[in-house]
Image 1 (cartoon, rainbow, N blue to C red):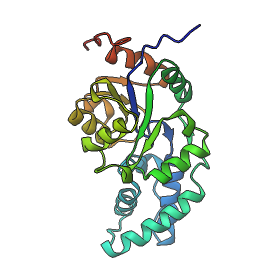
Image 2 (cartoon, rainbow, N blue to C red):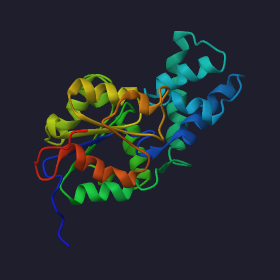
Image 3 (cartoon, one colour):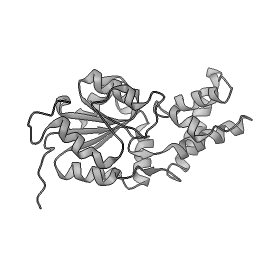
Length: 237
């Protein structure tokens, strides 16, 4: 059966860590390698996963703070470089797409949407992860922290992602998991879908998304509700 084209002209922008891919095991595993090398206790995954989402440098700083060590600013860059080296070597040891993610992406693409990754992760790390999971081909562009004039929650990051695929903000849905995604979408006046299973210090439901989803199976219909079909007026929620 021919695709309906219900998402023609639409852009769906995705956060990466905690939204598309469950990356916490490899990210926190790398953080714990650094902590233990410094004689500090490893952090439980459940405690540290909420620190993901503002880039690797923030994760290192926040992780050391949680382990009881406030880093001297002079050491942050050294530890960050050690983090990157280890993480790249283990980027997809345990990281996997969330259930239903790839099937939902295929539906969105088949029905006309442009898909772009809009992440505070560095672009090279993002592409390395997506390549390792055979997911890069599912996106029209990947815009990491270094490929935008500012990072989320600054709306210029989302604007850069939308521009990269020739989209329009009024026909864009930001799909994310945390306050950085919500802030970027609201400031850019884009639609906002949050997932309930990601990495966030503030519960996703408290960030007032247009729609909160619990599984990727819900994503195509949620996008239809916000964007409307074939340019029709979106449903008011």
